[in-house]
Length: 456
Image 1 (spheres, rainbow, N blue to C red):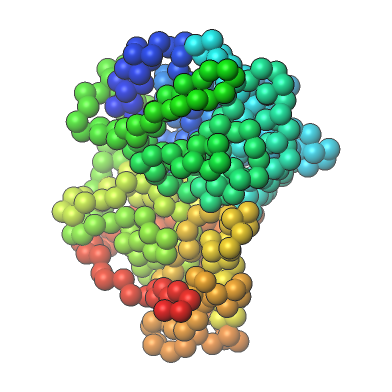
Image 2 (tube, rainbow, N blue to C red):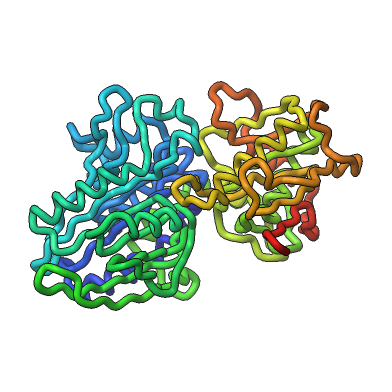
């Protein structure tokens, strides 16, 4: 996810582990969101990161944002159950089914042998892809948690001699923690999607949950001791990938340099100067989210702005330029059109309530991940412990300092709509134009969202 630069530091890590343990004793697994999040990923339809994963010799991956490349491109890269894809990479996603007969589209699991031990890796793609992302991009596929299918895959793998069962999952941490309590026989869940990072695995019954963060910032090394057909012990290290402190791998650096060379001049062009910490890292807002929302309000002459709540890309330190590359790293999706439409206050509140329930529903299986939609021109209070429909209150239009009126229509600008045929400029052009008019960006204190908990 994000820019290519950090990946030059990965080969030394991976090579060192393979050299120490022996390549025939190591599995390298990738948890999804790999083929998106940068200009080169967008323009190459994921081919840039396919090259990186191939160079790293990744044994298997699963997916989420990969599916926003569309069915045709995913089948071209990864193939299906019937045929191999052009990349040669193993996409494991047993919970993806065709919408006609509910037959599996991709291989659900694969047996590897490492050091004389049979290891079954079961792949679980993001179960809510058709809700969180445009379903028209994957019209013939359905998703879902499909707990029973995982249970059957675990049983079949054990029957066929698996001594270790790994779930390579893009469910999200809370979903996987619940799943570990309900599906027995999984030794390790490599959990992704929610960008959590744990210094040590969390043990749920006999299952180890490993969370390795995002953006290639960490490499999780999990060593298993296996005897008598079961995991007897483990050791774990969360390895920070400090790209400025690790000598780049020459081959990977050359590969990435070749990918970036045609675009380097444009990507490095300065749009504005940053005078604070800019990030998209918070559950409710972020300082670069504020920049995006301010740009939406200004460029689309809107009263309220809505920006999708995914936490992408590395933070920008104070006193550094904001470049075209930074903007693309924050916004490069395949459905970038900026819309401008009228919404009633009632509809705006309903949108916020719906997203809040996706995040804070007490049942993890109803949590669809991501973060709260970012807002511009609007303030509100959220009680995360309240029941559905009752979390959002005190909505105030900042331009007029007046309460949001349920029946009144407001001009709303936003982007990342899951609807088809949305008309408007791409978000990166709008944000870049706004930055060029500002020239200097100083993040402001953020008080628009007030968070309360039950009883306090």
